[in-house]
Amino acid sequence: MQNKHYTKAYALFKDGKLEKALQYYNLAINEEPTNAEIYCDRGVLFYHLNDKFKSLADMNEAVRLDPDYSYRYSSRAYIKD
Image (tube, rainbow, N blue to C red; front, side, top):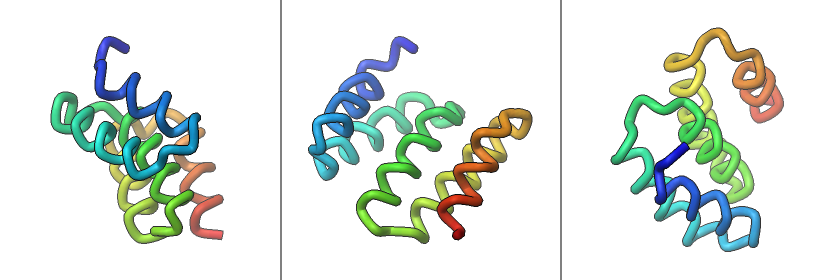
């Protein structure tokens, strides 16, 4: 993936800088609004920020964009649990 915002967001997330990572995930989605991977990763971030509603919304969008990838369904189920 060549989206520099996504790359930065992912690195910040891994470093535990969640609020800053969120800013970059938002920029990445603005750059690639049909990229299911970005929505999925931002959904995981929202989960870590204890925002289940936004987490599920992003997972639902990831499933809508990429319905054939089972990981997105299992991630959504985990968040719902």
